[in-house]
Length: 272
Length: 78
Image (cartoon, rainbow over all chains, first blue to last red; front, top):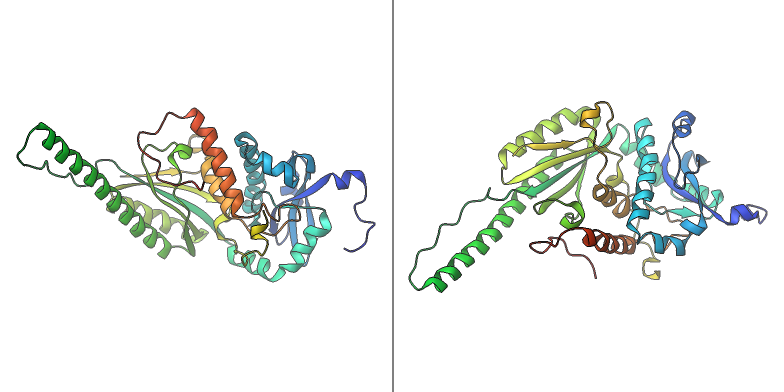
């Protein structure tokens, strides 16, 4: 690793190594059928009994400066996210995978190998924990009109006063609706978590991004034993019946993006 | 209410096939995923990434989408 003879060619200096994920072993047939982040072949870097699945990424597009610019570009971000996901998804169908966060780039294979060595225990434990399991997403949206109607308030006064009373009642009804939906989301999440190996809630999605007609109150991710999927599905159905105030949407199976070990807070966090 | 089931990547039945929604994917590939600190992205592979990208996304999508009738429910970091 400290030899200076490594990767001194111009091509190597201009190319980074994009990490898709870490597996225990990679089937060459799986890798042959997919392409990497820049349309480059997917290959492996083995170390410490682990395999990093990577693809070459030209630094003109995937170096730090270029990434800062490109990550602000929706079309670029979508293409990168989908390319990365295609590889992670293919790996997850073949076995357990620890997905890498988008935009994890190493200078060369040696650096990628060193990361495997340094985090061997954690990665090995995570792979063991994820084996035979997959992630499912459950989103919950407010259902308009599913919350109790607030009665038209009676009272004296003129048309203006009546309007103000009605308006206040509408606003408090909406707040009440939001509160009821939030309570339902919490109850649904607790119930689903009880049926899952692990669970977490992502931040609700902005409607400008999701295009959803009503507010999202639950954006849950659940790690499920493959054997337990039927029970999980049945529970979602039962919860949907029990909570008509929210509409549930199931997505998956996902690679276990939401359930990889979080590292200790990184000391360079403020260095951006 | 019933459950809408989206099986994003099951091609077994073409009728149920739906592409993965970008916003669902970004929840996962940006905010989560193991951070094996890369040499180049040592500062990018951080929370800042999510913030930058979401701001860009909202700006991009906002230019296309009709204005919201009411404020969005999620605050975006300034």
